[in-house]
Length: 494
Image 1: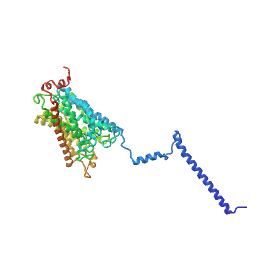
Image 2: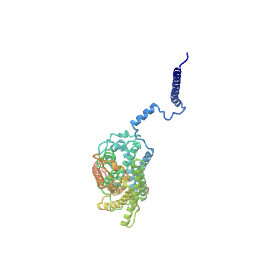
Image 3: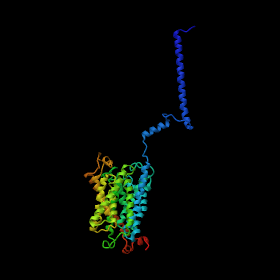
């Protein structure tokens, strides 16, 4: 029986549909097979995965990363610079300060003076490890950190601490700050050289670091510290690398120590000339080099702020050396080599609080002022009040950083360090800390508090140590020299 035309068309359409379904099924089978074959080939090391293909695990990892962003990542360049800065700051103590101070005293006291700096490299390091770092940078109250938080450096490891430096290991930050803790009390030793008992010196320095340095470090640089403008402080004091924490605290304490111990036997009537100015000049050069780690390292990374602080440090030291030399030349008729060296150190100490906040012309201005101010403090102020600051710690470090901190109040630049324009908040309102009368008053408050804390604590600690074991050597030991009387050694064989 033949098919009608309509039936034939219907049958032909059905057959065409079946063939289309067969082709679709075949294509699906091929794609499915390839999907199974690619992971198998990748697992066995053969073939490459299509660019857009992703495993379920990869998609889950991407979702987790979107919900929980990765933590701070260590930058190897930043870490390398910070480790180098650690070494540079330690070099400031030994051999820098060791040679600088050692050359300035009489030959019978050179070893004892050098020992005062060297021994603190050991003593302060262990204090820092046990509880010092925790008191300085642990979370606590506005005046000191919790001494138990990082006790024995527990929790201070390879992971960055984003509160302080997000691109280097927490341990690197800890080491860098430890070098500051070492050199600060060592500076004080210059004021009491040639007349202090060694055992009394050790006890005093342990107490001073604990009562003055660690708390002050927390107040200025620690999270929640009273003067920390970047992390919840109440009074925003700008101090880039240690104007208050290092130089004013040590300078004021040095002056108090010098007055309390009294003048050296024969001072000021007998000449007490440096026994080896060459040693002091070598020490000066090492201090200048090390200071780049001190100031530029305080940027805590290898970026443009470190470069700016590096430049400010150098030009301030150069300007201060010239202004001290010119002042001495004008007033005394000739410049001294030791005076130029002292001017260099004065410029370095004065720019320290301002290094990361001021332009190069401002740094030069600060250095020029430092040379004149510190020269007059060392010569006129010391002579007028007749105190025996053996190696002029107060005149150079204390007076220098007074000037640097206060000048910074007027010269701080938001162009150099934009963070000071938008970081600090008072009652929920952003307050700019660029130079002006308001910031000058903040700086003055920080300086005043540091002076009060350092002076009061130092007087109390000196009294405690004096009552416990006595501070000063007797006249016979002082006459023989501390090298022999305290250490049984001579620096030079006649």
